[in-house]
Amino acid sequence: MTAVAGPRFEVRTTGWDDPAGAGLRDAMQEEMESRYADRIAAVLAGAADREERVEGTLGVESAQVVYVGVAYGGGTAVGHVALRAYGEGAVELKRMYVAPAARGTGVATALLAAAEDAARALGASRVVLQTGDRQPDAVRLYERAGYVRVPVFPPYEWLTFSICMAKDL
Image 1 (cartoon, rainbow, N blue to C red):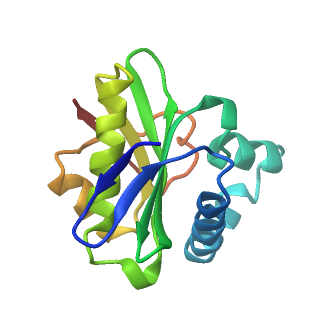
Image 2 (image 1 turned 45 degrees about the vertical axis):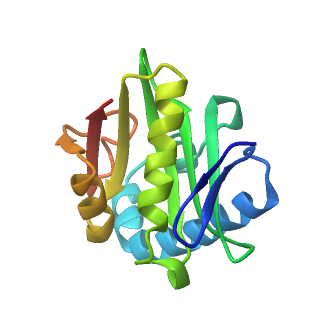
């Protein structure tokens, strides 16, 4: 297990099935469903393949996950990040989340740095990500870290509120 220390926390490399990581992903899912429920419902209103579309776009197959990091502060899991394989030489940043009580403390910056270090160690030359227009704090974080907006890439094209970004390592 690799650990990256921060001022008041550490990012530990773990597996996708780690209970602390799973709990943070569940919390993120709740928050995102609440934040985007109206948008997703509107986009899916006319779709014949609703469940397949949502799961195919927003789901993460554990077999595709190549890195998981969980940030701990004071013995408590406060943040999560994962990478999944995405095409030749790239990885996709997935499930980046910081618990509300730990926001603004540097956890997100440390998680992002740990994910980028892991991507480099895996031989990736690029990190891509998708976020949404109701997450301006996330967009600012990524921009400060050198990510630039790119055209919306598959499988997110049908999510009209998507913001896709990339960074060459």
